[in-house]
Amino acid sequence: MDQTPHDAPLTAAAATPRRGTVDSFRLLTARLKGQPPPSPLPPPEPPSAAPATPPAPSPPPASPLPAAPEPPVADVQAMTHGAVPVGPSPAHPPLPGEAATALLDIIWGAVDLPPQERSMACDTLLILLPQLPGRDVAVLAERIAAMEAPPGPLASRLLRDPRPEVGGVLLERSAHLEAGELLAACRAADPDRLRHVARRRSVPVPVADYIVQSGDLLCHLALLRNAGAEISFAAFLALARLAGTHPALQAPLAMRADLPLSAALELHWHLPPELRRVVTARFLSDSATLGRILALAQASGGAAASIGVPHLAEVEAALAPLLARRPAEAAQNLARLAGITEATVGRIFSDGQGEALVVLLKALGLGRARFDVVLDQVRAATGLLRDDRPQEELKAVFDALSFTKARVMLIYWDWFMRKAGPYDIDDRGGPC
Image 1 (tube, rainbow, N blue to C red):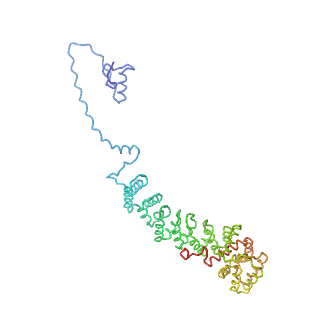
Image 2 (cartoon, rainbow, N blue to C red):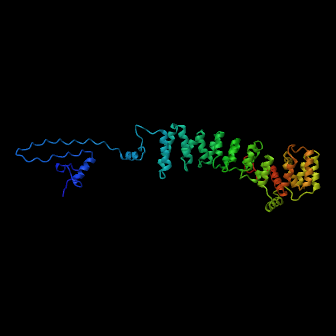
């Protein structure tokens, strides 16, 4: 059997190989390698007596060129996948933004990162901060704000940044800031930063109270429109007072889902007629339970209002000084009949819209026919009602009110004037 390798050079004997033979495969291999096929050899000469001339010595084989050094395995893998080799090159150090991104990836992506390594990555980021352009710092703030456990020193540094795209982003979006940090940021902040805090997904009670005390109208609006803000009762009362001079606060406050009944009935005084109807419809209803609570409050002394309905003649006698332009005497008489303080009646007289007087007359048991007459007399003789308030609107309010609803409103208004029940708070919002 022929043991010659298949890619061995052809010999003279195989100049014209037959197809399918080993020599034909060698010829094909030579062609694939780019070597010219060997020229056919002349036929052998007959032997002669004279010795043949010795062939010329073949040239020595060429020495191979030195191979180029292979790149490191890491670089080969990086070039294979189209990535930059890991590790900074001495000739091309990374830019500060690239270094910051790499450090954030280390902090964010490494679940089992030892605390000391995480701490060093954070400290390195603090060193890089002054070198970063504003756009990179803004991106860094967004990523820190989205972290479940942001690095404390780094978050505190960014929180103090006055730029809205940096410090404002953390104030508004970071869910892991303590109430103390938020209060510190509020106290040293301008109104723009307060608005960022007011728009947070969760605003604790002390922070919401501080925002209300700031007096900034846009902060108040942002707080009222934020369903995640926890507003205290004292803050609701403060906002109710402000709503009288800032109409923009009225609708958001009246529609606030967590507005307490006691705050809503105090807000009633500072609202226009259409929103007063909204508050009455939202918070007052006729039910057996409400009637029972009202009776228990009156019987136990928790409400100063009387239980019984006075006679019509007593009501007429109490109203007579008012029609004679003696409001102080009338307030004393009506307060005795309704079981409320004179201060409460005086406040009712001060309501030029007229709803408060309608509530008082309804609670005194006045019928519709007599109410129409008394209303006309009060408008003509006292000047308590505004001229631009139509009588028909006040009559519609009277028809929509029940005796129970009127008594509840009267009791809460009296509690407020006496600083009793839910209104027993000091100027700081706490119990007296």
